[in-house]
Length: 475
Image 1 (spheres, rainbow, N blue to C red):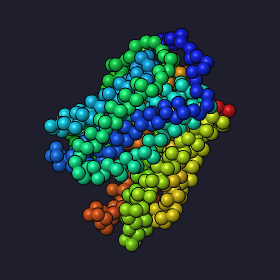
Image 2: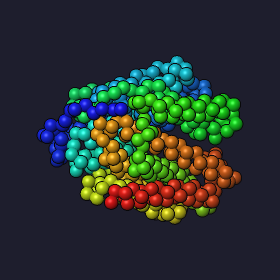
Image 3: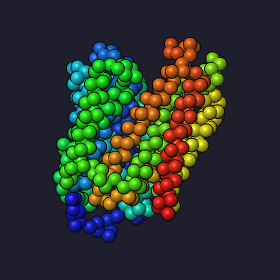
Image 4: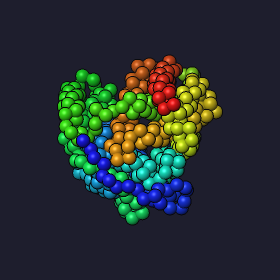
């Protein structure tokens, strides 16, 4: 049984209006979330260089380890933050990411490098901790909008970061990516410690390390199998062993958390509204992000090939990236404002509907550039609104002393659904490839592209039903 420490927030400590101090806090927290992009996205720019340096063809281990490790780090960081303080654990998160970046920077072999990537995965906990800090330092009216800024602001900063990083990579090689991550983590650790106040609301109890290790390692193993088996083979002996070990760890973890008094994740208290929120948010965000991935692939195909799709070239890809990032930045704060007025459940439903409309438009947008750019913007709005309103709804349902551990469920379900949808989408595209080559790779057929869109649309339909049930419950 978890008991709440009898600490109350002073009446004048909660931010009830926008001020320079609040803006400074949000800038620092957005910087911490930008570290997640530096850890997950930036290494993709140097993936061929890393494979050559470490003399390995296992690209998935080099690129995906940090994201998969985040599934283990999130519950551990969230529960510890509820007990020890959210700002304190956010600083620890930055320091662990800093250490992991240094390990990757100097790693002499691939084993040490993967260990560094595992430590870097702690950066995935920055979003849930920054959301919890924001909600507890602000009144709901201001806090919901601020959560929209915190959860989506890094997407806009990520584009110039990647563009500025490209010439640095050309000059100094793959290590520059990890040097950037180390510097950013160090700066964030210092600024968070100096300028972000510690929310006073905490819970007592202990951290269930055994449950965190069992559930986390099980998720890593199962997701690793799902994401890497398409390349290595579904019946590969090593992959099958990884799957069996992962399932066993998950089963042991579930049994453990159902029996202990203070589990890392209390599945016995997972209410229907919370399950619907997590499901709708994960399906919507995963489906929209998979569509953005598809649109980037489509944008590289010249329409002159006559495949029935293609909007042709590097400029189109850049426009899609920029417009989707701007859409995310618009969707987050706007959904925050709407959440404080009409409720986060209705806002979540609205974001999903926008994504569903954009998905329908994608059937035309894969071959018509203006329609594709509009769809990219709307998809960005949808994912920004879904993530921000989902976090707002999760923190509205859970009591403040449990914001950390409850918020930790969000990155876990996002990771699970995103990996699953991406793998299914890639399998659909590979099964319908053509003999036409684009950059030396077999092009996908129009049928495969349309099936991919319909798959994502089906996920959004299910998310719409879940969000509708949530709205009815809240009414």
